[in-house]
Image (cartoon, rainbow, N blue to C red):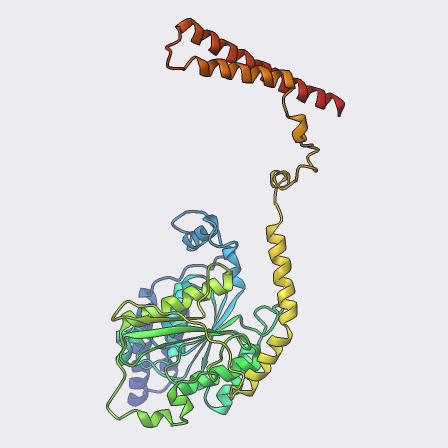
Amino acid sequence: MEAELKEMLTDLDTLKRSLPDHPSLNSSIDKMQLRVEHLTNLAKSAPGRRLKVKDMSAEVVDSNPYSRLMALQRMGIVENYERIREFSVAIVGIGGVGSVAAEMLTRCGIGRLLLYDYDKVELANMNRLFFRPEQVGMTKTDAAVQTLSDINPDVVLESYTLNITTLQGFETFMSSLKNKTFCPSKQGIGVDLVLSCVDNYEARMVVNQACNELNQTWMESGVSEDAVSGHIQLLIPGETACFACAPPLVVASGVDERTLKREGVCAASLPTTMGVVAGLLVQNTLKYLLKFGYVSPYLGYNALKDYFPTMEMKPNPQCSNAACLERQNEYILAKPARDAAAKAKKEEASEPDSLKDKINVLDDSERNITLLQESETSLPKSATLSLIASITILMEGFVPSNPEVDSLADAQIRLSLAMEVLDLNLIKQRLDHLNAL
């Protein structure tokens, strides 16, 4: 950009020389030159953007932006962290939660981000965690692309400045989700996950409708108007409740949400609450995409009590959304195939992985071991009688008549000899049995 601005200064100077001496024209050109010079100075002072990284590396050096992320793979948390570059995530609403979620995913090295919003950055947004004062007046999508591209130039960023609740906006939203140019071989549509970070129920219902029609998994998030609670929710069409299955009162009643807001009254906003909700949202996004840990179907957050409630919501068979009912029927029909696949996976996981395990599960017949019958282990009659006689003699040595020490010692010796006879007979029987095999 700096070179282009310098070239523009040269063009303005040439234009000024070529024009006749006209005070008003020269004054206008001088003002333009001053503005271009100011932009040139800003471009010079701007921090340099790092070069793109072709492959993620686990090498632990200061110049590697992914070394701490790849450590998750080395520690066994994630099987293949570099797969994150293959995923596309759409974020609807670049406000207090959406902008922070976009920044976190960018720092995590997500492959592609699609950003949707129609609003502009205002000074009232400066209590949030993402936008800067010099970005006031810019669209939130443009400001987000500006910041995110500086943070990580490896991420493919697509911005859509539109209102998805309008007919034209909804059509553009749907077509952008279906676009597979980033990864043509991907199954399904062009994105792997949609994150709803909007602040009104009308937009949530639009995202719900789009994802039901496309059979697209999405996550919904929100913060309460008093800024001290929030939630995230995983919605899988047909498997979990959609947003219309159990709608909030404001949706179920059919009241226009805009009539509920009074002039001069705005919702509270705490960057701490929004940061917590955004962190939970991105954490579950990473677990969902990279297949590690447990993805919460619903996770709430109460900042006043540090309380995190969880729950599961099943789809409503009488849902008012036709696309949701269609997805529910598809899910029910596919249940036998899912159960068979789950059973096969469980059996595969239970199979022994090593020869040692296989040996441990062999029964006695597979090891060529034959158990002796009870009659084969019994003592010969002569040895039994000898042992009984020895025990009797030993017991007689403990009678109250105080036997002499020699008598007691003699009895102990005879008992010891009897035990040796017992051991020798057992060994002989085992040897005879082995020779007979």
